[in-house]
Image (cartoon, rainbow, N blue to C red; front, side):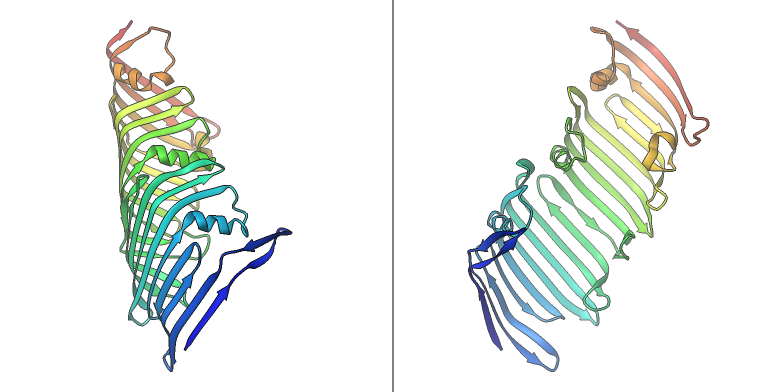
Length: 362
């Protein structure tokens, strides 16, 4: 069989206002119908902003597409309420699915966006950059055309904001409201903190006067079961770290953190043991951090911490947040022991022991 369709001069109403899709869209299909079902030998879509080609059936499928994102946004704004969004870039994508056994298929997808840029309310969310992403997995189908489970999923991402890879031995989608189930999760990525903080501030997830800078290398492994995330290992290595809060700046050339623990999303509780922090000013060790309800950290947290700090380096790195008289300098070594228990609303406890030797104040 062969068929074709063309849509031209499409007009309609959006929120009571007339809109028009002036550019034509054409679709052509050629295929075969047999006792085994329908197979598409060629399916093509052509428009001013999107071109796509595909072939296959429900067992074997191959799809490629390309899109001009600036042109796509211009057309979609006529019908959708996305006026605050602007963007540009050339998108290329490929999807391949090959059935290897009944209800089991090998799937792969590749995404390549060149010169991608995104703005929201005229504020940059993503500065112009190339973005590449690759995905592969063995897919187990559920009822109908739904996906129930991924075996050996692997995702790699390359961009100036984030570059890394994600993998697992099993990743299973669960009913709405529940976390997915995953075994042997592994994450290894590098992140641009300035671009991430700009993104979060635009979506009002960070205060307007808060900014981050530097890079972070994150490596983590663990698993997800029911509503619980188990972190077997987590390592964060930040370089040239900067935290800006208005006119105040916290700076550290290298700051590392290592920990392991569990998070329960049903009870909003968490346990980490131990937490080791190493920075230019010294080290901080937290044998165990317990949070019984992270929705109210100040009233439901218990921990103890020990620190070995160089006081001169501490004031250089964190001086904007340590209020000292003008022209005052501190030098020496400090050992600190902090004990905090906010787990009981009736009796909250905070104790700090400090041993400063040698100590110099000028």
